[in-house]
Length: 253
Ligand code: HEC
Image 1 (cartoon, helix red, strand yellow):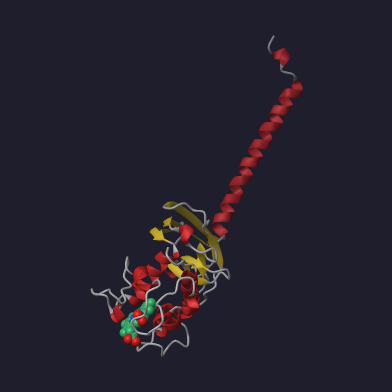
Image 2 (cartoon, rainbow, N blue to C red):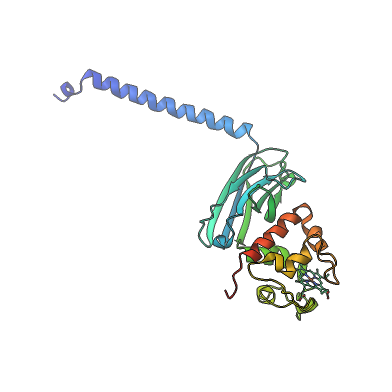
């Protein structure tokens, strides 16, 4: 009695449907196999990112690939500027070719140029890798103040300015937790009538003038070389980043 309800055309539909399903499946599998073999290295970067809202919109936080001696990124995988504080970010860079020398978690400007590298791996160390290369960065502070503290002041300045206890040269303490209060709208102890930083005005700020080209002789110590020796070709972009930081400051905030 039941069989009379299952009419022949229904069985045909069913068969056709099953046929479509199986053909789709096998097609997918073949495609995946060839993809994995023919393309270059893959890097997965994991980080916990905080302070994203405090990065000027002129800049992008990205996982990017670079050739040796080239400060313009080859490929850029941007991290959304809306990332919440302490959000876990996981980004995959794939098809990395053998001419790539570093993969970096980096602040880039609008020209895709490296400004400051926050973490970096050397692809030469992974030449034999066949699996995904892991790049675990941990927690990174990406606001402009945090980046400048960690990657400029801590790296290039505190050895003379407060890192050995006391306030340091020119009574200027640039260590963590002290730098901003020692700079922002604070009168220079060395150049009468000037301020270390004038909020919102890089051009008027002594900090800008002593780091910029032409600022060699303003003080008794030449600061322009401090940035070029640490950042090499990236030094001009770092100077602009510091200027943008100063220009973004508001008095009494
Ligand atoms: C090798 C030591 C040394 C390093 C490194 C150094 N400075 Fe200085 N800095 C000095 C000395 C010495 C003076 C005072 C110069 C003078 O008396 O004319 C000074 C003065 C200054 C002043 C002027 C302070 C004022 O009140 O007039 C600023 C601003 C400054 N440094 C910022 C920096 C920054 C930013 C860095 C890192 C990028 C840095 N310095 C790295 C030695 C250093």
